[in-house]
Length: 236
Image (cartoon, rainbow, N blue to C red; front, side, top):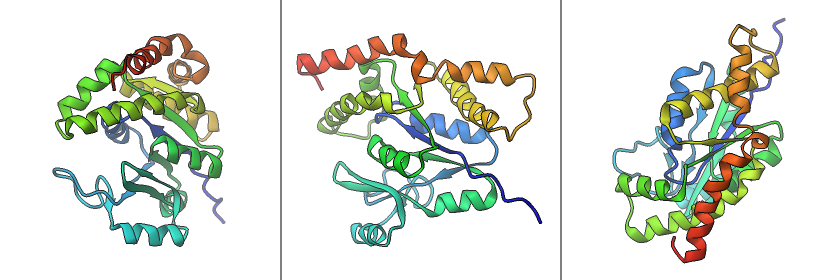
């Protein structure tokens, strides 16, 4: 009789809109094996070239609310007037395949997952400062000015939750950020003991440790200050 596969590691990734999270997740999934990505359900309409079942599962509000009543979500939240949620089935499917699971969710959803899956590894991605975040939001050219300002206000609130996460990754230089995110995922697997500790074991752990909450205090101070000063001056 074959032994049951280990319980999947669950990775939570959260970030303010415009922090580059989607790019980091895309690159991570290219380089890490046996890692499933949970595609969220949403009631918002598709944007641009988005396709159902690729970026999101797009459903009506009534369909989403029926799924809530039936207990089909691990977490769900209403953001900017639209529902977003993570279906339980993704965790079951990852466990059946012996894979780990990556969740791309906001701070509301992360808090729900952390209650239901207390062993989950949580990663918060930050921009290097508020000005950079605003520039990134404008370059996307997806939103009107009022939406950009609303996203900046939301970002200022969201980053106050950074202390609830295991790891903090400042997305300043993309190649370095990709390497750090991969190191975090691989380090957690190594610590679980289901991968051989090859020669790069210590290097992977050291790189991941740079992002641990306890080790990023000094790096965070100017980032948090940039958001706080904007709020105090009345900007987004």
